[in-house]
Image (cartoon, rainbow, N blue to C red; front, side, top):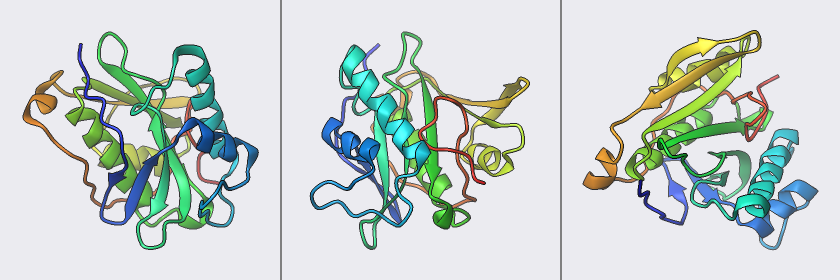
Length: 201
C-alpha cells in the first residue's frame, strides 16, 4: 500500500498544524522553547510532553514517521502553540492509523480541537489512509463530541474508554488528490494512553 509522504504544515481557517521535527520535539519534552518558538502560557502540558516523547521513541525505534507524526497546533493569528495533534506512527498493512489530540485548558471550548482533528482526518484520507482510530475516557464527553462531529463513529467501549473510528475506501481520496481544511465544532481532547495530550479537566 502506497501513501503520500507530503511534508509541511496543515493550514485551516484559524490554525496551523506544524509537523514537529525531532529537534523541536526535544524542546517540548524539556519544556523549554527552542529558537523562534512561540508558546502560549501553560504550553506544553504533560500530555504535550508525552506526545513528543512518544514521537521521539518512534523515531528511535523505527525511524521518523513524518508526515504521520506529531503536529503542534498553532494559532494562525499570532503563531503561538496551544496544543498538539498527530498520528501514532505510519499506517499499518491495513492502512489504519491511530490519532490523538489535546489543547491547553485556556484554549478549550473554542472549536480548535475539532478544527485540528478535521484537518488531520482530511489529510489522512487524501494520503490514502483507509481507517483512523481514536478513543476517549468514558466520562470525557467533550472529546467524544469532537470525534463524532468530525465524522468518527463509536465502535465499542471497555471499562475505561470509548473507541471511535472512521473508514474510507483505501486510496480513493489519494487518487483524486486533496488537501486539508477544517470547520468548527466543540473542543476537547483524546484520552487514550497513546494520545498526544490529556483530557480536559
